[in-house]
Image (cartoon, rainbow, N blue to C red; front, side):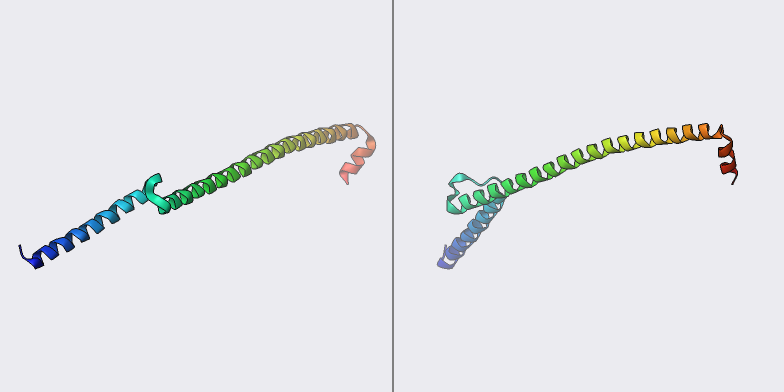
Length: 113
């Protein structure tokens, strides 16, 4: 084996090692960072936890907003029912008054005009 061939083998081995390390790093980045990855790994872990905490906070805010909306909608439903009952009572009272007024001679004259 000559010297050039040996240099090419060494260079190829280094390139393959570099590619292997990049692939390992790429797959590790998608997985949970390891604790023993050094300062960079701890930083990624910290950023990941911070992102997770922000996501949980965002979800909590959304849940709180949904709970508030539900309570407001329930209150509106209650008010709608009260209003509907008031309108039904008023309608019944108007109908009763109309029936009573048809019995008097003055009411018949008013209806014909």
